[in-house]
Each structure stands twice: as C-alpha cells, then as structure tokens.
Length: 214
Image (cartoon, rainbow, N blue to C red; front, side):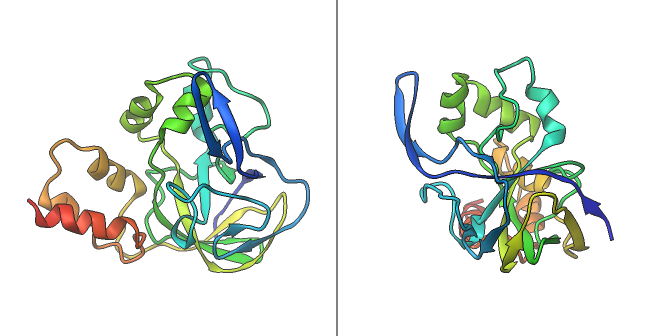
C-alpha cells in the first residue's frame, strides 16, 4: 500500500477577519495541531467551518497539495507553517490529477473518501489581496479537494494517508474541475463525472440538473 506524507494537520475557530475592505466570518487562518485529535463525520474536533461553502459530512476535511506551494511562491505573500489556503491537511504526492472521486485512505484510526474538488472562494482572494487568485486557481486546476469521513477515529501529527482503494469509476478530481470550469461542457463530460458514485451529495444534484439542460 502507498502512504503519502501529511506535512501538517491544521485547525482554526471561526472568527471575524478583515482583509482590506472586506470583513467576514472565517476559519481560514488555520495553524498546525500539536496533539492527537478526533476526526468525526463532520470534521476535526477542534476545527470550525462556515457552512455556506465548507463543512458538513460531504466536506468534512479539506486537502491542499504541498506540491503546489511552489506555484504560488513569489506570486503572493506566503507564511511559513500556516495552511496556505486554509486546508486541514497539507500533503506530498497527492494531487488533483492522480486522485479520484471515491478513492479511500486510512488516516490515523479514521478512513476518509474523496468527494469533490474545492471550489475557490472570495475569502482566499481577500486574504492575499489578489482578486485574480480565483481565476488563477481555476486555470491551473490547483484547487485541492474534500473528503467525507467513512470511519471516525483519532489522528495525530505525523500520520500519513495510506491509499486503501481506488474508485472503479476512475474519475479524477481534475476531470471534475475541467467540467466545473468549462464554458462549454459536454454531455460526455457530465456522463463521465456522474459515473463516480462517491461524488458528493451536494454537488451531484447540481451537475445532474445542468446535464439535463443540455
């Protein structure tokens, strides 16, 4: 079995943040945990999420690849030791192209399953004072992605992600991104992505409705 390194596990409480002229509630400023923590069906025990974009069982845990950090370095200000885009786990070796919707991983005592890409929001752009960040993230495909928790359990700093099984549909996170960000999506793209039974229960109805409008 292949195990991918988790550089850090991050959490934060929701607070009122002000970046420039924007003020909003967010748990974007996540910091690494230093102790073991329980991972529940709705996320890490000491992590909070703003429900309009994140959280719930279908977006319990957010991953962003450390491999992409170099892409952003120099283009915007980065802070050592902090989660670049407010992700819960920062990993090495996993990315949107080699990870599929429905892939399952052992994470400490827990088991997690990929559900959908992370869709960039204005809060990230506001944090870095980079209005064009959202477009840059979409064009690069460097979005990160979400997991649901299949089995709850304790996780600890130093725990890796061990691949347990690949989803048979073989729909990569990148393929979902290409569908979501395409200006002219095709029925073939929709049909392929919708083959992934593990696709989040929040995203699937939206894609099915758009498919039916073609």
